[in-house]
Image 1: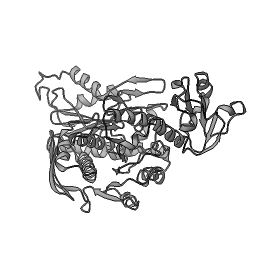
Image 2: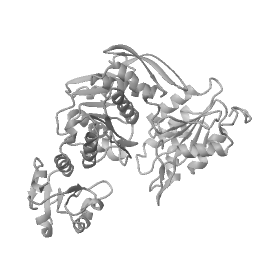
Image 3: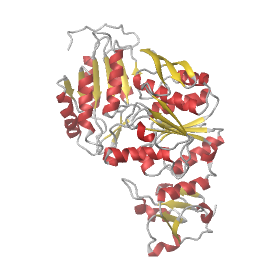
Image 4: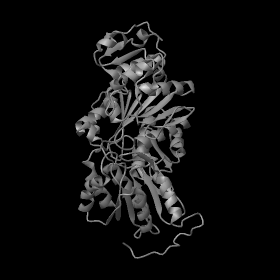
Amino acid sequence: MKLGELLEGVPSLEIGADAARNVTSLAYDSRLVEAGTLFFAIQGEKADGHNYIPQALDRGAVAIVSERPAPAELTARWVQVAKIRRALSEAARIFYGHPDARLQLVGITGTNGKTTTAFLLESVFRASGVLAGLFGTIEYRLGGRTLSALNTTPESLDLLAYFAELVKAGGSAAVLEASSHALAQERLWGFHFAAALFTNLTRDHLDYHKDFENYFAAKRRLFEGLGTPPPELAVINADDPWAARLLEVPNPRRITYGFNSGAQVKVKQFQQNLSGLRATLETPEGYFDVESSLVGRANLANILAATATALGLGIAREKIQEGIAGLAAVPGRFERIDESQPFLVVVDYAHTDDALRNVLKTARELAAPSSGALIVVFGCGGDRDRTKRPLMGEAAGSLSDLAVLTSDNPRTEDPILIMNDALVGLQRTGKPYVLEVDREAAIRKAFVEAREGDVVVLAGKGHETYQILKERTIPFDDREVARRMLRELGFSSEAVAGQRGTPARR
């Protein structure tokens, strides 16, 4: 494809490169450049693509696209644009033949609940006979294959390549988690969404957005349109305080959900146990029952969100019921670990104070009545918003019987200092706690304390299979560590519940 053809519709300040040059691929990572590649130099949060222009040229890049003026020596191989990510998206869309136009796109934004809601919607699409892609925090499903996710929301170039593969496999829909970073950085520029879904807005990512107004403004962009008309359908959590401001956006159709009596899709009756939940929903299409192996009010809210969206897209309610029932579990989202131990072990991704409260409230409901205790192992991520750390400590302490404070992904920070930030909130509750910087040792201490009927929650890492330290990234999966630790403590399929002694309560 000719350079000039790729740049059609891209507002350019100056094209110094030969528009007739042939382009065989696009890249924003110099390591992926080969002869014939058009290289987009993007200044990111941690790396600046301009620093890798020499490598891109050495590997055969035909031209460089940048927001900056051309250096004198590169005038003949330079394209200057006003907005680099908009240019990347538009060029990639032309290069891959507009695959997004052949897909019904559903975007989900919010602090918590995006991943589970996305899994539920993909399951509902599947039940209705529609092959839908899934793109989010855990993985990317392209129809024919599944990839581990690098980012919650990929760059537009990657997303359009995935969409082209999905369309080729027969896909006609895609469910995306739209992160606030991606929306603020315009990674989704030019994508037209059939439906936009808002789950909630709680404290997170303020290290990047600086304040709640900026955080909310990023999420609002999904509803306003991203260089495209607004989504035809807006699905909004009526329980969230920010809902009213989203309802001001003039989307053609809107549907609300929640526990709020004014919501259009809400719960009439609800019951749960260790096996899952049952609920009767009240909707604009009438009452109907749903069953799910997921548990907790937070997951019930996710079910409401998926139901409201599916109804708004015209999916039959029996297919919605089938899809919800068909989702057995979501990796790292209240995922139960069973080695025949006499207490419940749950791994969850909760890494904000609001998410931690939700998961602990759910866990409390599943502990043995009167005698069951709730133990939580948690930590806070490094190089992230410090202000949420004491709030997480307070949530952990106030809602558990014993909190084990440990390390999460410390990144470049000292894990002890991170723990000290969380300890401020934890001590405020006056509840028992244990400090153990080694996460594996912390999990062991929690299991040693647990007795029959208790619930142990391992919070923060969920589906992650690594731990990010200052010098290196090491393999670490809470689920695998928990299974191994339980076996080392003598639990197995032959173990008898209550075999160990039951000491006096803490």
